[in-house]
Structures are given as structure tokens and as C-alpha cells.
Length: 130
Figure 1 (spheres, one colour):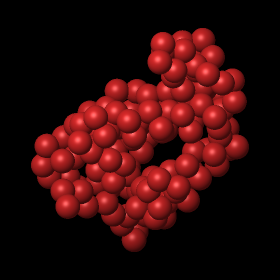
Figure 2 (cartoon, helix red, strand yellow):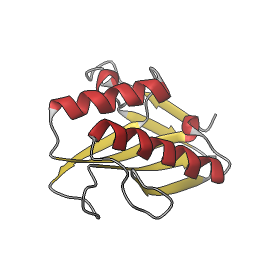
Figure 3 (tube, rainbow, N blue to C red):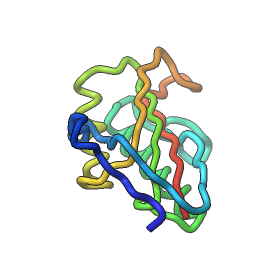
């Protein structure tokens, strides 16, 4: 596999927060643009954070499959959360665990005041390796 994800013993175990510390990658890299709770017309479908997050990761999966990849090929995420708080971090951590189990990709979470469109509460972009 072209992705080796690890967590050095000298650092805290970040997996309960939904990320790993290090991703060593070989092979072709594929970049997936920010995905959010979008319908066929690019509009958000819900005002609920958990629903938006779930749909964003569903859309991420669709984008990955279009490139011949899947969630297991992702080694890096960037997540953007409007009005970030610990409750939202918990929702995100559960979704990451649901998808990646105990081997989550590296991740940078950014708490932001707003995203591109009115009503957007969450966005995720990814880098994967073939």
C-alpha cells in the first residue's frame, strides 16, 4: 500500500480526535476539492451540522470513486467547521472513526466564521494516493 499512517509513541494518541500524526506516501497523488452538503445544484440541503457533515463525506466518497479510489486511499484531510466547538468535534470524530476506524488520515481542522455559501457549516477536502 502506498500509504503508511503512524502515530509516534512520543506524541499523544490523536485517533479519538479523528486524525493521525504522520502519513508517509508513495505513488500518484489525487486532490479532491472541498466537499460539502450539496445537492445536484450546489445548494445545501440541511441546517443541521451532523447532516451536513454526513453528506459532505458522502460527496467525498463519490468524488474519490470517480477517480478510481476510495476512503482507504485518503491520507490527508482538511476540515472546515463554522463556529467550531467540542460538540462538533465529537460529531466529526465519530464520522472519521466510522469511515477509517483506528487508522484515520492526517487532518487539519480549521474553525472558521463562514464558508463559501450561506448556510454551509462544514467542508472537507482530501488528498489520496493511488
